[in-house]
View 1 (cartoon, rainbow, N blue to C red):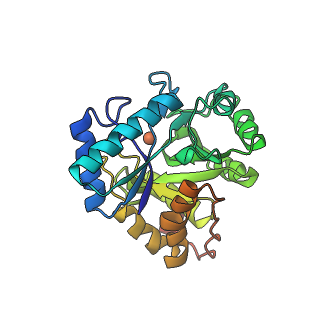
View 2 (view 1 turned 90 degrees about the vertical axis):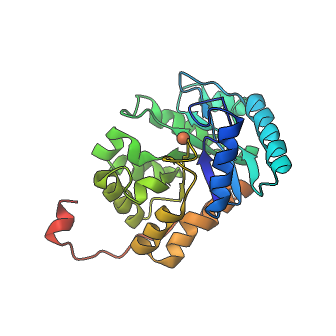
Length: 257
Ligand SMILES: [Fe+2]
């Protein structure tokens, strides 16, 4: 498996505190079947800046440590880019990292509780620059939970959506899990990732989330979200979309989900 969103690089954001914790996270990932990670430290979120050069240097250092320790985990560079007005220019200037530094798709993060004025303008600007915005964990944004059709609109323009595996498996509550399921069934989700910050708790484990996707969507669509699209992101290829699930007769319980 490939994990396209995690905070394994040590000491540069709210992820791994130090090299030792980064190695524990790497061991945990390998133990749970992950062979490649795209490291995505926070960028310009008001606390951490982490420009391209800093992330590339950290990735090289982590690779050396993994090699020395004999841990079979490939490491690629990336960033979780806060959606700020200067982001499109930062990417053009080569200051902000796209997935695997390929210049095709970028992991973008909204604030936790709001969709700031101007969000649509920034997304449009990125699309115009031929950068595909991948919206990080939309299920963790309160405003998108209140108005979930907004994500569908962005996906209609060409944006993509990435859910957190633990949201799908219900670790963050049934409300988030239910919204994940609805978006999956509408065919507007493109991949899942761990968003791991620690070797425990928010750990680099995808298997539980993937099992839930198989249950919700069937094997073919779950494979696209868990395997095909993460690989395509690392190779700089366009992502596949899944078909909306056939409409089911709703039970009373579904109506209140
Ligand atoms: Fe993250």
